[in-house]
Length: 273
Image 1 (cartoon, rainbow, N blue to C red):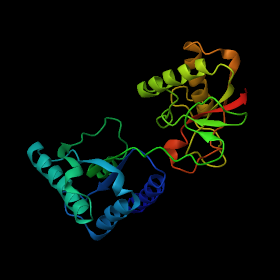
Image 2 (spheres, rainbow, N blue to C red; image 1 turned 135 degrees about the horizontal axis):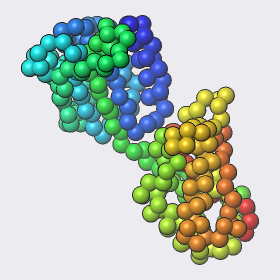
Image 3 (tube, rainbow, N blue to C red; image 1 turned 120 degrees about the vertical axis):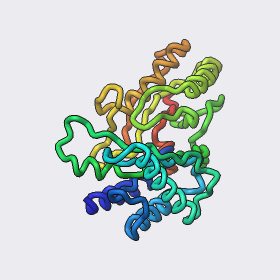
């Protein structure tokens, strides 16, 4: 079990290295214990070192127990586990003021169809640390021919990075703020009626051998296409002439190199003026 947990820690740290807005780290305890041994302590320290602590907005800590014992005792034990982790985080430089929740949740009941009761209980004796990150600032666009807005004197090949049209992981759905931003873009496109363009969808974080990602809504490997298509349909709904636009998904083949948030994006590339 400990070997599996160490592997999971390595995978988690690798995943955290790619910027993200939220992550959950779990620390597992022995039966009826809430103190950390040396190995558990080192795992917590490794977790802290793997994340950008300057970007942390808030931390929530939740402690749990397995299904054995009385409720009152389990609430106390789970709360002690949560506070142990809180103290370890603070000891290693995490500011107390960003830890907004420290709560013992008591016991987790076993599901009816559990095959390995011992393993299930060992996973329930844990603390979950939920870390929420502040959004990264928009990247500086210093590349020639790349802009963050539509302007009058654009030329064929210019790229418009829609910096406020960003997506959640695995999603092609437009957020409320993205729709409001696209309304502004639609107004500019009505102003500069000569511009024709390709809407390009992009994704992040897929392995090199798998260029495209799965859209969690359709469960098909078409995420970047769907992101471009969503923008296309929205602009059509705002009466931007469909003959001016095409759309295409580029998967993970054109990363910006500025963090995964900015690879889950859509760009406009001018094709005709």
